[in-house]
Image (tube, rainbow, N blue to C red; front, side, top):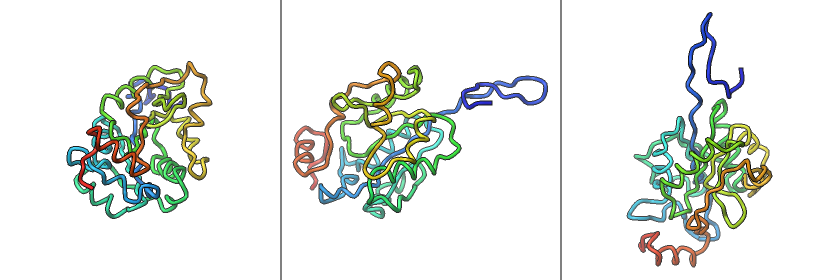
Length: 219
């Protein structure tokens, strides 16, 4: 019986089986090398971005929530003392994003549902974005959803089990954007959220986010 089946057979009668729920992955293993200090610990309204991302992901009620840790591991973990979710170390975090995705795939081995993937460096991220992606993926032919970054699909995103299984083959700093872009256009739900296109890779980007009220001015 395939994972898409909604019934299980036990004895002579078919018993309803609840479809697999989603898992959530928070990518928090980056080294912030261009920024010069851990972006995970930048704050919005007094809350570290890593804790905020975990809180928003947890708010979607995932079956499992895993937080990928690597660069600045101890400091980032300390910011998550009271946060929900499983902590997953990424020993090869310095090799790029693909190492975190591969580690997440191994941690979620056996999970049969979709996977919501969230980053920590999008200070404008809100719960409504994540809910829109999950709802969109549920009705998309590919069962995938992504946020548009220009004309390219990216994070946050919802990956179907079939597509998430492919992330283990990625290498270096390559994410899953290429996998999503290869899907037929009509098969992928695309979320237009321009505020999520900004990143925090440079001090200038951080200062702009502070000026826009998306980050606290505590550095």
